[in-house]
Length: 177
Ligand code: ZN
Image 1 (cartoon, protein in one colour):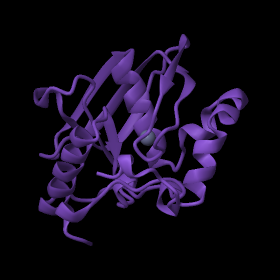
Image 2 (cartoon, helix red, strand yellow):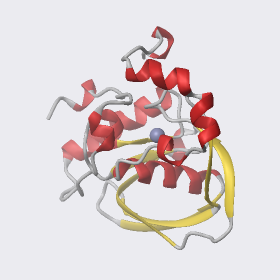
Image 3 (cartoon, protein in one colour):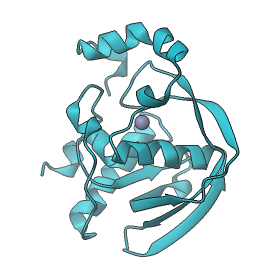
């Protein structure tokens, strides 16, 4: 693999965003360095979550931070979601791999996540609202699912031009880090 410090956010339609990611079999220095790089790219963007496929690494790993405070950084390795609430919520989402695209996405309002941290310890968290939404959005990336697949037709229409530009490989300079 490349030097983790050289990883950059990849944009749709990069095919890696559509590949189901592989479980991380061992947490070593390389994994920790990739996660560290992902956290800095997420903060730099700025964004609230970033999944490994979004930096071109097809691993089941994502980082999240709902507040932007460094103390709230979390790394989820081989995450599993469970207990989605039957209550759903509609909320606007963006994606660092889909610059200029926003859409209202319906998701369960609350969910539980179980994952490993960078010390190899398993932990579980339950949340509602923004953290629950971030986990579900980032988890989708590990299965090659994008907000494009979950957005309403009306939002697809509203984002038609931005999508067309991305597909043509035209992303405004302002979006380049
Ligand atoms: Zn995303």
